[in-house]
Amino acid sequence: MHELVTYEDISLPADAVWAVIGDFVRIDKWAKLVTDAKLEETPEGKFRVLTLQNGQSFRERLVDEGPHHYTYTLPRAGMKTYLSTVSVRPVSDSSSRIELIIRFELEDEASLDEQTAQMTAFCRSNLKAMKRALGAA
Image (cartoon, rainbow, N blue to C red; front, side, top):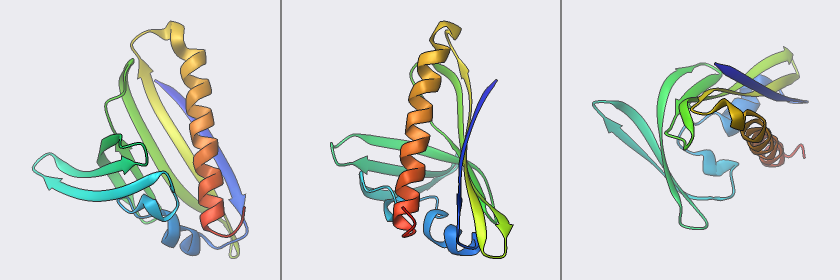
């Protein structure tokens, strides 16, 4: 399985950062392309259903969560497995690190460079949006 890790350090305590970016469902607090976010609880687990400005919708299943992290999955074209983790780690009492980690398996390894570039751009864009929501952009 491949792993991509992106991160940003921020001059805010971990609890303050998590209060803004840590809600699995309410990512519209920082992801401004999301116009609607809803929770679905089913026998298969918790899902967030996100609608974007362009009308496109995604259904993502929560697979793990803890005090300062959550991991979700969703079907992605060209991938056997896709897991994405959002976490915040304290660096000091007054600073923290936001980490975005994607673990994935491709159906065709020939697309690894292209997929990695797309996911890196996606993560960097999310980090920028998170920092903006935290007033630290």
